[in-house]
Length: 562
Image 1 (cartoon, one colour):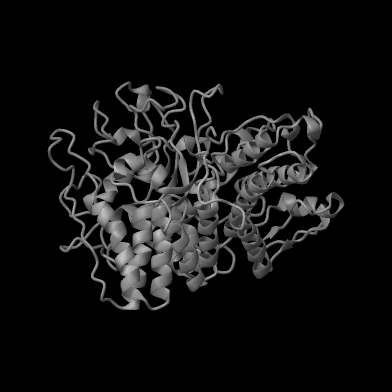
Image 2: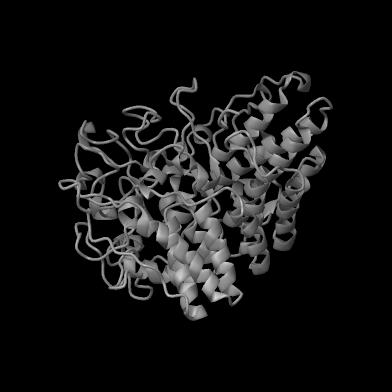
């Protein structure tokens, strides 16, 4: 099978959204008898990157509500600043409000995310209805199982971001849709997600021919993650073990993992597939992260991407986490007591820093014309010196979209679930169950990859490392409290700026204390944090979009505090 792409299926072309997603009128409708079931399934997969052919700008350029969750997790968690051209530069109208936790029910960003997820769910449900009414499609049961995993993923995203949702599936009568409440019964909602995953597991094979297709192990991974969010530790391990026993592994070279299309296939348990040279204008690309490429004054031809908008700026706090002690271990309690200067190459650091975050003076992905420059940042005074380096394509890749716009995009897939993430789920569950040595050994497996991966080389002296890279393994005979800190630190070191940290803080129950401390300390460096605060019991989740509450006639209820 070709990579899962955004395609235009006539029956699913949607007009501009009116009051809510349920009021969208289809255009150019063709009969079900003329539809190719496989095309409908591919169209449902294409909902993963939140691009829809409605004619609305936000539905084709989802950079204010990207499926990577950079604006809903990273800039709300301390991993990143919003970036761009200052606090007034706000894709979607209110992105700065997200990073200072002052979001209102009128937020366009929250509405656009809600809208994208329900568009995707609509495609899944509609395709299941067509398949259920098709008698001569040999892959019917298999494809329905795939679709149920996709639906579980989309509802999982609603759960993580909104904490509640209106559950609608292929069996919901059209006349009843408007009366479905956005339930706050989390046990019911988790049950619906798990029902889809368990039904899919009973049907799916462990491997599929098509790259990007859901398989049984992907469903097990989502089930393990659902159990993780509910703190059901034994079930986390049971489901994670099914994935770990499969064909996935940690790749050897972090630089290639973050830069080279296809290299991470063995580590990506499930990823959004992107492509170039596919007949579309630019390629089916990760447009949700389009604006996160580094800036380039005057389109300097020595710059690897010519230009970019410089959003999603790694924070000073996340940079500081990479400092290590004399044993090559993280400073679990004191990493943020002082700032690592952007041009400091002598302080001992974890080598993952320069693979994942761009620092002025440090080699950029083997780019030969220059190392990263200070002027790749649009607004140093507001957002500092660091540029996100993860999942920006190798400038020399023959699978890059072009030498200019769309800048750092190409056929570089975005991981929704990585093998490293699954390993850390099992490590966390083991630690919570009191099996600290098992948890620490898994964490050390992640650190061993980082220790043995090729280092970033010095631009002027390629035979030397670019900085003082030092990393070693944890002792395994530690207390449970120490192991928890190590696990939480390792998740940031390994998965920062990949859309995970905010949701981790919430499920660990420390979001309010951690973020209020973070913003207070950051306010000395970033003045826009002055007076900002996180309200416990409210800011863990986005508000239900007011436009949806109004359109429901009061059927939908708002979260407490909004």
